[in-house]
Length: 394
Ligand code: PLP
Image 1 (cartoon, protein in one colour):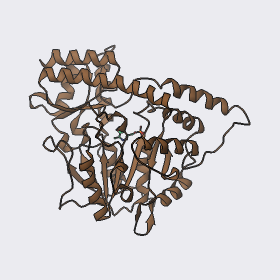
Image 2: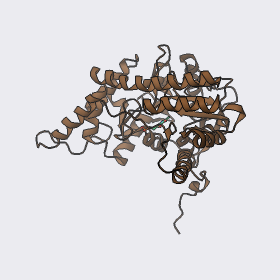
Image 3: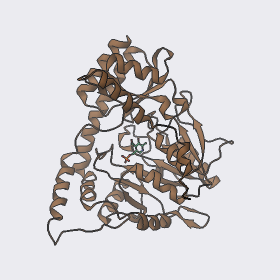
Image 4: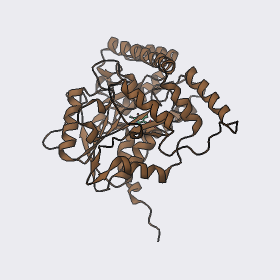
C-alpha cells in the first residue's frame, strides 16, 4: 500500500500567514467595506523599477524573433545573469567564480530544495524567532530540529557555545522577523564553529539590501573561512520587488566539501535533474537590477520602505514601546504593550484600529509577547496606521 510522507502529519495545523488571513477574512465579512492597514505579510507594495520593466519588454521582444529567441535556459542559470551576480558580490569585497552562483526562482524554493544535499539524519539548528518555512521544510524531511531561542538580552543574535550541536545551521541576517543583523565578529564565531564541527551554514541573505550600517556584512562570504562551511541563499523579492516576478540566487563555493563530496557539484547534479531553469525573460530583466541604473532605482524604492520604518518607529517611541529592527531590515519587532500576548495584541489592533500585523508567537515560542510590523505597505497606509496606533495606545 502506498505510504505517504507521514512527517506532514506532524506539521502544525496551519501556517502563520494562513491563520492571519483567516482572521482578517472573518473581520472583513463582519465589517464589509472596511479598509485594513496591512502591515502583516512581507509583500512589497511598490511596482518594479523602470530599468527592470524595460528589460522585461526587451526580453519579450527577443522571444518574438527567430534570431534572438531562447528555448530552455541552462539549468543552473543563464551565464549573463550568473556573471552579473558575481560582479555584484565584488561590491562587498567577495570574489566568486561564475559557476559558484546558481540562479533560482526564489529563496523559498531554494531553502526547501537545498535540503536534498543533506542526509535526513542531520540535525538542523534554527535560531528562533525564525521565518516559519525553515522549521516546516525540515519537518517535512523528518529532520530533528534544534531550536535555539534568542531574546532581547542577546539582541536576538545568539552565538554557539560548548553545548551547541547541529550539522545544519540556519542563519537569517538581516533577520526576519526581528530585524537583527549579525556583526562580522559574531558571524565569525558561527563560521569557526561550523568549520570546527563539519557543519554547514545555510545563510539566508534575503534582506541584505536593507543594510545601511557600513560595518555590517551583507554576505557570509565577507567572513574569513566561510567558503568551506556556508551556502548563501538570496532573492530579488524584497531587494527589487520581485515577489511576483520570482528570481533568486544561491552561492555554493567549490571549496565546500563534506565526507569527500563536493556540494557545488552535487547541486549542479541536482539542478540538472530537477529543474529546467528560470525563464529567459525573467533572467534578462533581473540583470537590469545589477546595472548602475537598476541599483539606483531599487534603492529609491527601498528608501520609501525605510521612511515607512521611521514613521512607525517614531510612533513607537512616542508610545514608549520597546522595539528593535527597522534600521537595517524592513521589519520592526516590538514588545506587545501591557504584557499582552501576541495574538491578543493582533486581535486588539485588528478590531480597534483595523491594523494587521504579525504575532511574534508565529515565529517560534520565544516570539510570544512580541509583534512584527512589515514596512512594505504604502506610505499613506503606514502614516495612517502610525496615527491609529498612537490614538489607540496612548
Ligand atoms: N527568506 C526569508 C527570511 C523571507 O522572509 C522570505 C520571504 O518573505 C524568503 C526567504 C522568501 O523569499 P522568496 O520570495 O525569494 O521566495
